[in-house]
Length: 423
Image 1 (tube, rainbow, N blue to C red):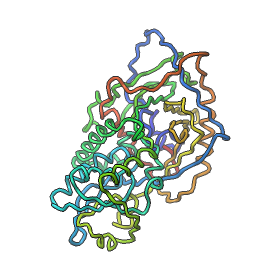
Image 2 (cartoon, one colour; image 1 turned 180 degrees about the vertical axis):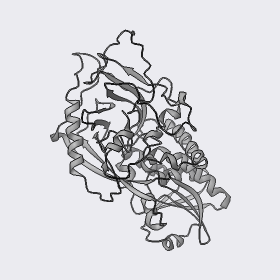
Image 3 (spheres, rainbow, N blue to C red; image 1 turned 60 degrees about the vertical axis):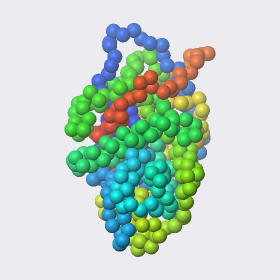
Image 4 (tube, rainbow, N blue to C red; image 1 turned 30 degrees about the horizontal axis):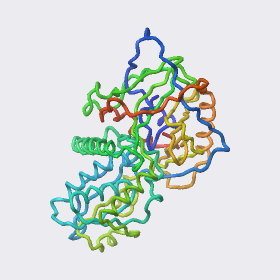
C-alpha cells in the first residue's frame, strides 16, 4: 500500500503517528513455485462499537522544511532549538538529543534548562545528564498530558517529516545521524520497563508488488537497502486475512504511557527537576536562571519564536478494550481506497489514525472516528479464526535486525496541503 497515494486522496489511513511497514518496501521475495507454508494462527481481533473505550487527539508539530536543530542567542544566553519533528518525534528524539549535546558543549556551561516534557524534551534532558549537565525541565504539561502520549508510537523516522524538495545535504546529515543513534538506543531499551518491543506488522493486500517510482531518497539510501531486510510475502492460504497476500515486517513499537513515565523516573533519579511553568514570550525564557536553554516546545515555537512554517497536523486514535492475545499490527486498503488498521497496546487496541493539516482543535472528528471503527469492523470481522486447538502465532524479535534504512520511507513524508486527511 502506498501511503503517499492515500494522503493525496484523503482516505483514512493506517499509520500515522506512525506505523511502519505498511507500504510494500520492495519486490516480493517469493518464488511462485514455492510450496505453501502452514497458515498463520493469529488471534482474531474483536472490533465492535460496544468495545470502544476512548478517542484521543494530538497535534503533530510539522514543518515542510523539516525539524529545526541549531544554536541561537537569547540575550546573553545560549539558545538551542530542537523542534518540528512532525510524526517522527518519538523516533528521532534520542539522536536529536545527542546532537543537542554537541551544540551545547562549546558554551562551557553546566546548567541547562530544557523547555518541554514530551519525548524530545525528556530524551534531550537525559542525553545532557549523561554528559554531566545539571538539567531542569520547564513545561506547561507533563506525561500523561503531552502530545507524545497521544501518538501511535513506533520507530518511523520519516513519518510526516519533510517535503522531499526541501531537503538539503546539511539537513540530511543531521537526520541520518539522529535516526541511527535513536535506532540503537531504542534497541537497548526493549523490555517491559520502557514499553519498547519488536512486533510483527502485516499489510494485507491483493497485490504485493510496490508501485513504480518511489521516494526521493536515492541520494541518501541505496535501493538495495530500501527494500527491508526481513520483509516476507505470505501467499494464499498462509495467512488469515481476507486478501490474497499479506506482507510481514518487523517493527519497533513503543507504549507511550509506559515509555514516557519511565523517562521521567530516570530523569528525576539522576537529579533532574521538573518545574511546571508556562511561557508566553521570549522575555519569560530570558528570565530563567540557567545560562543555556534548549527549546523543545514543538508547536509552542509558533508563538514563542514566531516560526510561521510550523503547522499542526491533527492526529486521532480510537481505542478498543485491550486484547492481550493480539500481539501483531495489521492494516489493509479497502476497495473504496480507505483503510483499516489495528495496533495492540496494553492500554487498548488502537483503531485507525488521522492526519488533518492546519487543524488546531483538540476535539475528536466524529466523521473520522466512525470511518476508522467501521472500516476495522468491516475488514477484521472477515479474518479466518485460528484452527481449533492450534497454538497462536506470536510476534518475535527478528533473527537479524533490519537495517536502519529499512525504516526510511521518503515517499510518504509529505503532508498534503489541503483537505482533511488520514495517514
